[in-house]
Image (cartoon, one colour):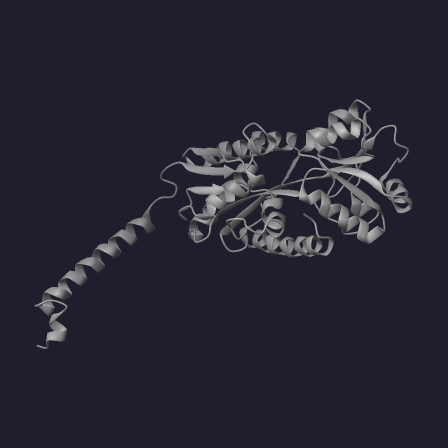
Length: 329
């Protein structure tokens, strides 16, 4: 026996036995993992907004339905910061076992990473899409005293002189750029920290128009303080079905809004992704879940994983083109 071979041990048969035992232990562990009934312990859904807001309400409503379906607690973990980027950065490093999920909004997946270059995640590589939970319409509103009675009127005004409009998220700027490049309308975006401040600016006459959401604007519309001119999604908002879409009025095919999705860390087993998807879809059909999400102005979806992945990539490329063309920051 050569000394070279003996470096592996004095007895080759004993070496083979050690290797065999190790392989058997590995196989038994892998088999145990494969046979584990998922989920066998609580599942966590993380989101990137503050507790008590609309995102938190959507997450907790969905989690309640999933808990009933799973037979295990589904816990909601709010991790605010950087518009949701803090949550996704942590999720990208989480164990890909199906027990830690994330519920991002579209902006933090398709827009934010192309505006802020140093984010700690790659939206196209670090996550496995599960489903689009639903869409939330974006509205353009004006004070009731403003002479524009419909969106076509506002576009006509904006073609003659720039119209100031409150914005509070990157998607607002992207929508304005898309509308302006197609119609020739001129808008001056006036940024605000959030929707409440933008709403106050419209009501106070500091801007001509503003972006809003169906659930936030509905009360002001009923009180006669606001006029909702249009929604920017392809479908009308169920909460305010009388408000037309941009596609119906001035730009056929126009579709920009906010969606809420469910994703897992990249590498999560396909069978667990499929199980989560099926239980989410079933949860979205529960009467109580449907009612609560409708009150949050969410038009539920339940899009299959492959379609959701294709949607993310398509919107990432579309939004990136607009961001680069108009230098949106």
